[in-house]
Amino acid sequence: MKKMTVLVALAMGLQGVGASAESLRIDNATVMTMGSMGTLQNTDILIEDGEITAIGTDLSSDADRVLDAGGAIITPAMFAGATTTGLVEVNAVRESVDSSVSETPLGKLHVEFDIRRAYSPLTSLHSITRTEGFGYSLLAATGGQYSIAGVGSLVDFNGGFDSFSGSDTVFIDVDGYSSRKVGGSRAAHWMLLDGAMADLKGRASEQEYLTLAGRNVLKRLKSDGIFVFSANRAADIKQVIEFATEHDISAVIVGAREAWMMAQELADSDIAVMVNGLDNLPADFDSLGSRLDNAALLSNAGVTVMFTSDETHNARKIRQGAGTAVAYGMDYDLALQAMTITPAKVFGGRNRALAVGNSADLVVWSGDPLEVTSYATRVVIEGEVMSMENRQSKLLQRYLPEDAGMGRAYINR
Image (cartoon, rainbow, N blue to C red; front, top):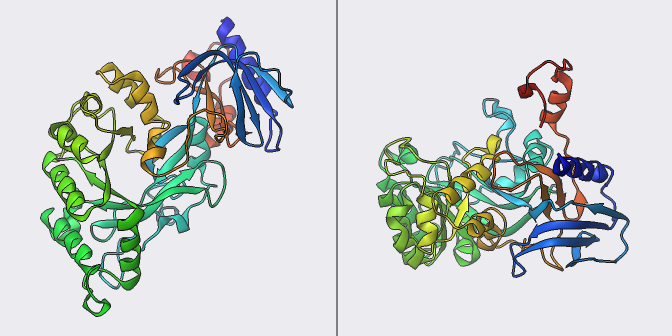
């Protein structure tokens, strides 16, 4: 009860902090820095002009607002996985979905399709995801006319229209489900992708697979971009490894349900994977080898692991997936890194550890962040304490029963 009282007081104390350049000092916190300082007990954090300017015990620096965390855990703001947050409201309402292009008159691989041009931070999912403790995501292109879905990158949930960072990232489907887009066989994916790479060596008049704009984009991506392949079968993952090696590209595999079968090959090739920690049963013939210790087996073999939920509308499940991975053998610190600082390293973003000089992107938690009963009490992005109000919380307040006799299922936390 005492701990809950402290957390409520902390939340109320932060309520009035706005988007100004106010300095903020949070005292007496358990700070999981995810950096070289490790986890610090009874520690204070000073934030000025959007950056962390001091971390230590008994900080005496003046601040516009001083708050006592009461020992609450603070982590870096979390990674929401590969999502279409900012590109979709309701999947069934076509005009609210901008994450894919299904048909173009030229009938070519459109590497130049850049979903960032449709991004809006004003979608309801933006604030909903952020209040769950997530500060950034990999903005992903989905589907597409052929194998290549389009280009995106990391995006911050700071409310800005141009909050993109990191390397340009191209999304490529090579799974069985998407093979219907290329004639019915997943082997056609590799035929088209090899053709696109061959286009880079030919004259413009000889191009068969790419537009001139697409050729220029692919050339740039091959030099300093990231290629994200959607693949689950071990056989398809093997093809990704060989393709990445042949063409000397930086590759990441998302999905990767059977990646544990190729753990050593992935580690040797330095190819990171993004998995759903809750995948444990075959969903189709591409995932017959799904198992809950997939992330643990990969991590223990030296593969760089990140987490996603496969659901833009339920990115919050990532924490549960990471917790499950830990329960099945993944190192706790590596699991927390996999959903905080590791994605930024993989995709070329800024250092997101809690350290002096870094942007103040952090979350105050009610308990262990990998425990499903814990929740974010406050989210700070670039030094600004973000509002915890969203469409869901407004609906809750509108329809929350006032009858004290109602069960706890009707009471918010």
